[in-house]
Image 1 (cartoon, rainbow, N blue to C red):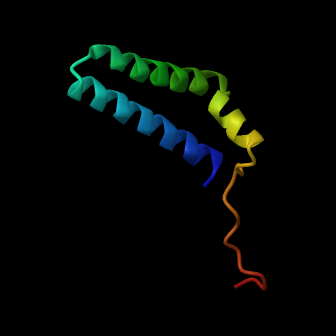
Image 2: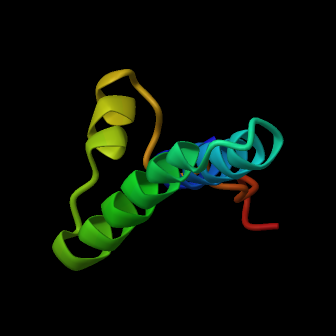
Length: 74
């Protein structure tokens, strides 16, 4: 997996988890997690910088998937 895909997976997981917790625990305070994730996605779109992406890169996650090119030009 690449950094970009993992950021999307983390964001989606946190949003769905906070919505489920708010629904099943009947506590709307869990929606603040959704607000936090949404604000970070918004900020990342404006500034082209994401803390999670920086952390994943430092952990060695590749920025791009390996090429599927076959040696020999096939």
